[in-house]
Image (tube, rainbow, N blue to C red; front, side):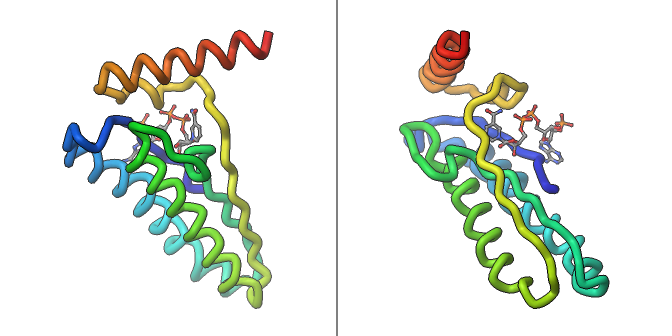
Length: 130
Ligand SMILES: NC(=O)c1ccc[n+]([C@@H]2O[C@H](COP(=O)([O-])OP(=O)(O)OC[C@H]3O[C@@H](n4cnc5c(N)ncnc54)[C@H](OP(=O)(O)O)[C@@H]3O)[C@@H](O)[C@H]2O)c1
């Protein structure tokens, strides 16, 4: 289950090339390489279950989430392609799309406006859950 992820949200106009690269490398390529690592074994044994972690951000895009969302949309795309390809080998595929959960994920957000919005969103969610 490839779950490693990074979410340094920022607006595209900030031109955070390094952050874009890291998100694509970790969230997208990490998932792809995880699939590549298990696929030969799952095929040979004719069983296995690939569980990929997308996000609500893989279904919706907001200002500041374009690149993160693109990687998470891509995780869903990869998973759907995989599902269609591995049916004959009895390999199962699952996509998990969690909503916002307070973890270390938000610590990498450097854009103050986006970070503030994200904090407000988390506060609102916890308030609603009480
Ligand atoms: N929290 C949320 O609200 C939320 C919502 C939807 C989806 N998700 C997804 O859930 C997954 C887990 O996130 P989380 O919330 O648990 O965040 P987290 O606490 O920050 O955990 C992320 C994990 O990814 C690892 N990681 C980051 N970059 C890596 C790399 N280049 N190579 C190997 N491992 C790397 C981190 O390892 P180190 O600690 O060693 O860096 C850490 O264990 C992510 O895919 C995230 O996108 C989270």
